[in-house]
Image (cartoon, rainbow, N blue to C red):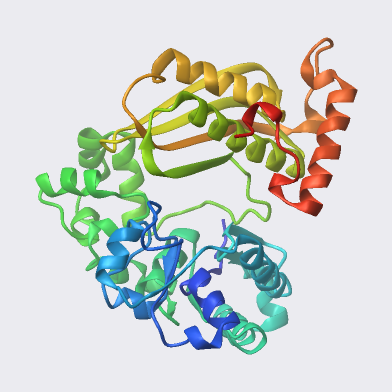
Amino acid sequence: MGKRRIIHLDMDAFYAAVEQLDNPAYRGKPVIVGGSPHARGVVSTCSYEARKFGVRSGMPLREAGRRCPHGIFVPGRMQRYREVSVAIMKILREYTPLVEPLSCDEAFLDVTGSEPLFGPAETIARQIVDRIAAELQLSASVGVAPNKFLAKLASDLKKPRGFVVIREEEVASFLAPLPIARIWGVGPKTTAQLRKMGLKTIGDLQALPLTVLRDHLGELGIHLYRLARGIDDRPVEPVATVKSIGHETTFQEDTADREFLEGTLWRLCEKVARRLRRKGLVGKVITLKLRDQDFQTITRRSTLYQATDFEEVIFATARQLAEENVWGGKPLRLIGVSVSGLETRENTQTPLFTAAADPDLRALHQTLDRIRERFGETAIIRARFLK
């Protein structure tokens, strides 16, 4: 593979920045996206002003409220964030068709073939950042490097408004002083394991031969050996493959109420199924996620014979998983459901005499989807779940 020029762009505190953009009174103030400080959810993201008080993404909202009592707490507005994301991705695709979104606020770009048109990768990255600032009034951090691992690492180093370039001849020396935890995919457990081997920096990893790492860590050792040397051959994939679609919710109070839990599970299954249909996908693997009052997380999954995008099938499978494993146990604080093993509906052969083959049922779902798209989630509710 020839030399590549990869850009990783990561918007700075994206959701919070959009809130500050739309509400001038929020600018320069600690904004925390996720909901009320009295709710039981978690922080989705927060502005850099809020981070000065120790607020972080994933932190319980109540803890964020204690750390930053004067913060501005707002619920997330995903539709608005998606609108802004579309505008960002449109700018990126003006420079290369090789854009791989990782989420609504970050993406990889392969600009190797774009340099003859727009100049060096650094120039392209600077133009993109400047255009996002001028056209959308938002800031981004970028990393420019020979591959995806290095580009993402670079973009994380100097946020916000970071601009870091790693040149091929500088890779080894650039990586050497960094802590091992900076390697993509190395979490606390692996870090602790490596520390027991006396390894603290990426330079320590670079000093070890492949045989030692492989003997001690197996496949993980091979992975670390390559990344410690800045080796990453993964291509930028313009259409990122969706691996799963899911929804979950955290309750205001722990509950073991069977009727309430089933009603919540049904509504989550409806949302998942609607997203599947919107994307033209079906899936075979149904996963149920529960978290009890002691914060113990339980996951159970089942593989279907026939892939589906119908909430009735998803709900029946998830409810059976719950009945077989956890219903009637400790009160729960969170419930979630997801569908994976995805494929496009057009490429799926549908056996006769199954729900998926029923044209009337599919037409019904399409009608209900259109009604809810126009009039909202609660426009039509199953009678059994009315309270």
